[in-house]
Structures are given as structure tokens and as C-alpha cells.
Amino acid sequence: MEKGLRKLGVLAFLFGLVALLAACGTSDDGDSDSATEDGDYDLEEAYTVVSDNSFVPFEFVEDGELVGFDIELIKAIAEEAGFAIENDEIETTNFDGIIPGLQTGQFEIAIAGMSITEERAEVIDFSDPYYESGIAIGVLSDRDDINGLEDLDGKTVATRLGTTSGNYLREHVPGAEINEYEQMDQVYLAVENGSADAVMYDLPNIEYYIATEGNGRLKVVGDLYQAEDYGIGITAGNEDLVAAINDALATLKENGTYDEIYNKWFGDAEGDNGEEAEED
Ligand code: GLN
Image 1 (tube, rainbow, N blue to C red):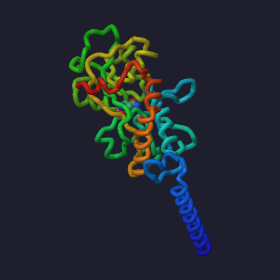
Image 2 (cartoon, protein in one colour; image 1 turned 30 degrees about the vertical axis):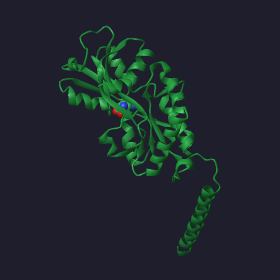
Image 3 (cartoon, rainbow, N blue to C red; image 1 turned 60 degrees about the vertical axis):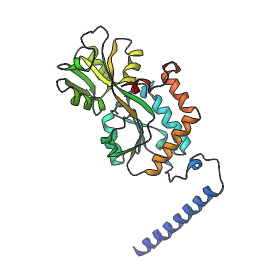
């Protein structure tokens, strides 16, 4: 027992020595690792990254592969900041499982079109905002009785579990029946088959859905009801990781990588994604 302990002590000492030498090495040789450019962050080699599984065009599965704006952005951030994504694979879960997963440490980083809110910021950390968004209403294209929030009173509104839209509806349209689903395809199906009168959700998601799979069957009505910024979620207490992610994000915005990814998923034509969110 004692011998074992001593062995452990020696091992720990050696390990510390190696770590010390390694640390000296990186700060002295001025290598080109971009993570050390703006600040020396104490990072792990790899982090567990999680995303949502049905939020077009930020993250969704196409031909068995997880693709989208967020997916490309977080890969670019990891590369720029100098950390790997654990198992080289981004995990996915239902949106309402993401924050609890970050809290328990099951996941360390989440990118999921997640809106920065005060409530969430009490239990997890957020990166700087990376996308300006907001929530809107969608209805069947041939419907003309719902033209804004005030028309949702007494109606059935579909949205997604655990998201800002559900909370917004509970607060602002107490007279609506709110049906919350795990998945966005269930939400859109509910509107299309008439079991819900409207969807309330993130505008870029509704717009992208209408332009692709939704094939014009829905339309957006009313205003942008709540401007929201998306942020990357990080398990609380990882200040260096937050700082490294913010640095990397700023670099990608400066060097054109962010724009490249943005244009691929949203097109140059749409211009600044924040335009509409600023109006109200
Ligand atoms: N932006 C919304 C929220 O944070 C929805 C995100 C999502 O469904 N992936 O609540």
C-alpha cells in the first residue's frame, strides 16, 4: 500500500516535470500555433462538442452526415483555437438536453443556434454572440386570419421544447394553446396537417425551411418579435476555453472565414443577418 502510494507520488512528480518542460517549450520556441497568438490559454487537447439534430441550416443531418453553418463554424473555431473535437465527432441531442448536458459536464461545448439569455447564462457560460437572430410566426400560405401575435390568442401554436419561443408565447400570449415538440419536423408537420394554427420559432429556421423542404407551403407573418443573439455554450468555469473561443471567433470574422461559411449557408444576397433584428 505504502509502496504503491510512493510510486504514485514519483509518477505524479515526473508527470509534473514533463508538463512543466512542455509548457516552457511552447512559450519559448515561438511556434506558429495560433492559439498562443493572442493569449496563452490553458486548454485541454480535446473537448466534447454537442449540437442539436434538427435546426436547419445551422445543424441537420444530410445523407447521414451532420452539416450546417454551426457545424462548419465550430470546426473552424476548434482549429483556430488549437483544440480537437473529442473523438473527432460532434455529438447530437434534442435541444432540451443540451443545457443539462453542459451543466453535468457530459458535454463541454455546445453549438446549436442557442440564444443567449440571462436565465441560461446563470447555469452555463456563453461565448460572444456569433449570429443575430430572433423569433417569428409562420402559418400556412393560404391562411389570412393570422397576421401577427395578437391573432394567436385562442389558437394552437406549435414550437419546440426547451426553446425561447415557448417561453415567449407563455409570457405574451397566455390565451394560446402551446404545443411543444422535441423535433422541428414534428412542429412543421403539425402546422401543415392542421393540428396547429401556427408555428412560432427562430426566423432563419422558418425561412430556410420554407425555401427548401417546406416548399412554400408556409409563410412568415407579423414582425420579428424578439431579437436574439446566438452564442456557443460552454460548461461553467472554463474561462480559458471561453476566451480562446472568443479569440478564435474574432480572428475568423477578421480573416473572412466567417463570411465564407455564412455565405455558403445564407447567401450573399441576404446581406447582414442582423438587419431585421435591429428594427424593432
Ligand atoms: N434559438 C432557440 C433557443 O435558443 C432555438 C434553438 C434550437 O432549436 N436549436 O431557444
